[in-house]
Length: 285
Image 1 (tube, rainbow, N blue to C red):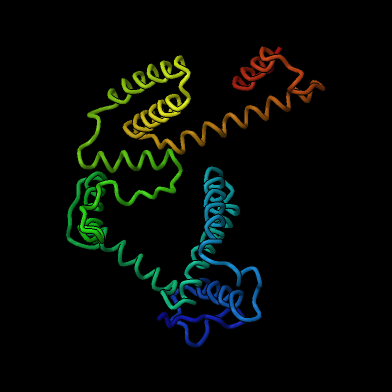
Image 2 (cartoon, helix red, strand yellow):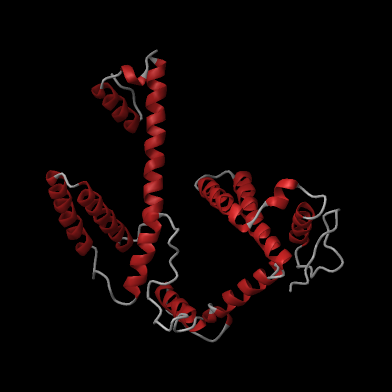
């Protein structure tokens, strides 16, 4: 059972707490303990690990959004919101007697030292690729070689099924590549993309909707593979593209509104002219 119990009402660590070296963290933990304790906030007291899942996802995406800009205050605030989710989960576990936030931090510190023997030990490496190989080897040594049923552990283990689809595809491909299942260069996925396009067109022509969905998935998977081999993060690339599209579309809306018109009143040709003008940064006819 955890012995940490920071619970003073004034936001300081309680007498039975095992304080960290950072007073701000101790104060946060004490505030959370107060919110969750008798006489605390009804909403906070009702939360469980299950109810916090959507909160964590939302906060992570809000953090991703501000990371693309230069607003330091917003970045700091969103980092704090994500930290709150970590502390909140640790508080719930601590209440159950499972572990405390200090134990989480200690485990992380130990793991970082263990997985960086080239910094904290005597191991020598030549570049990032060797660092990553050593990291994977150390991870494997930390795990049991077999699962509960005694079956060998898959090379694809450790990729969460709940990841966004593009990110998961790229992670799975990277795992497979580490055991030699990979194209020698980017020419392979380029050819595969053309092959998948032809198969998609055949499925569309046949009117087989399930085949269309399957071939579309194959095409997307191949595009992600090309991204990986060209050292492009597929998730970030699509996010940035979507952001560019949204910014240009809003610019078109402003241009059309300035003419006293509605988008629905414009022809496709007119909208295309506005689109090209926005891309050029000029004005349409």
